[in-house]
Image (cartoon, rainbow, N blue to C red):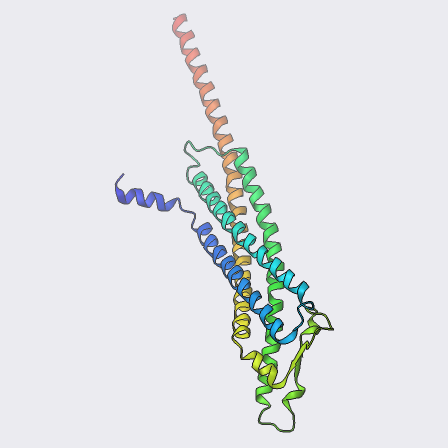
Length: 269
């Protein structure tokens, strides 16, 4: 084969569906982990500076956020390895299907591993649906604060409704206790909070992190369809191999019978 034919043959064995799913999974996990980590840090800064000036009031929340940041490190490392493993499994299955009529033999262990990946990917997909829903909660909270600031800005021209009466109480969300001081922000103070860099960055980073979690869910669903299809192909390949082995054995036995019959006929004549 020439160079061009070899390149075409190599490209024909690339699992493009698994490659696209891997890139989407890596991108979604990277967005969720990177943006989520920075956004959590900005959230702690906003709480400490504007809603909970006493360290003991938000000590538990700070520990939870720090634990979540460590969990983010573990998620990033796990999905980096898991994506590579699924991509390698895609290459293996593609080779099994492409070389179905050749010398390649699928094993029961390979089919079992493929089935295990289907189950594990399903479990991870369900878990990431929960992560996607959980990541929408801070987006909702920040959106409420931002929309309240927009209302305060729109009321600056209306003297009948003072902006000082419009407040945001973080304590009602349950992230800090009710005895936290001050716990809420009103009027121009709340407007200044919305204009800070920490609020602006955290709000948009939480949106991107939520989008990354959604992309990861889509990638896992894509992986699940690919793995299910590959497992079905491997199952059919094993049946075809068994049929070919039985057929070859029968043909060999028929040839042996014919050769023995010819030998007996020659010896008789």
